[in-house]
Image (cartoon, rainbow, N blue to C red; front, side, top):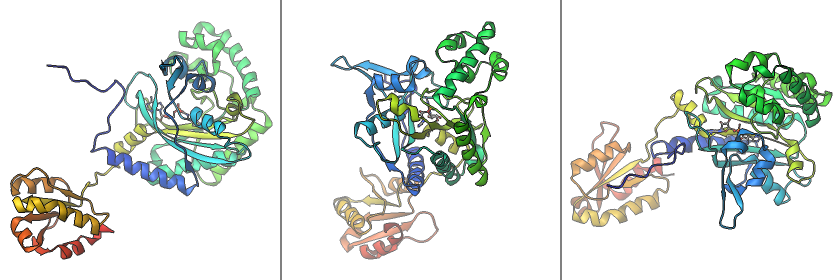
Length: 424
Ligand code: HAM
């Protein structure tokens, strides 16, 4: 027998019992985003490989080893997007959206990274991304943090998330710091692991992000970027933290937070949880003014974040915060030849009169008993029963499935009135 073909490792199906959970979270996200005046942008899933190399950085895990890159039939090198920031900025530059304008945008969809799959880490995963352009001040940095915090509040998970903040300063400040860091790590290079040795010259800040327990002490004693920030960067950061204090939003300053993508400057942040094991970062982002110039645009301002939907859903699941809503209100049981003929028209009549009613019609025959079982299992509030007698008398029987009330024979109009609660 032929072997079944399975999904690609690290790529998952969302099955029908889970998709209502996704829809619920997506709905709440959309409500929060529109409360802050953000607009949706829809972007391609495939971009030129060069875009990601230039933006995320050549010496990052993503570009070095995680991209799904292939030559298309013209021989062009294309890549399945590993994240959305680069594509969003590419689109805005291409369509002239950044010139003398301010934008608050969001996008939603699958991203691809060839990482080692484990709980919370997939090769295809969904991100909700938020990107804003044209605003230099810490006010917009604060706004996107407040927006994400409001979302956690709405979803009832605020208590499980910690906001970690850091400032990476300007490019010049980071260059100066980089020199100090290279000096420090070079003088202790015998203690560095192979990965960090490699990063020493190419991307020394990433050594700070190492999870290797053997070099944690060395990292703890390394110079701090905060000590190399200029006045402007310091003021930007303290303005942000002052507003958060005023609003009573708790946060932790994590001077080792450097992020895995190269385009950040000034504010960076992560929302992390201890409920999901090793993959505890649910949402992350920061300011990336310099990337605009790097991709060929005039100097401008940009700040944003992305959240991992699988991790967000896992966090909601861990707290039992996802209730299964029935997918139907009414199940139409159909027994008899004349009933089967009439049922489609009758079901359509109910749907015409009650456009929001969720009515599932039984198809495929079977005994009253077996159909009744299906009606019960569907989670519907009522069964509508159509037998040949009902058809002959132009009536329908209505049986409440969740209360002890009796089944009643009524006209279609009476049944429609009874079901009005679901219909508008
Ligand atoms: P990132 O930190 O690479 O940033 O990803 C953001 C979030 O996506 C992570 O915190 C995590 O929740 C989720 N995520 C990342 N990789 C995986 C994976 N393999 N499996 C499941 N979830 C994952 C960015 O992507 C930036 N573009 C964020 C940004 C937007 N910065 C500014 N604007």
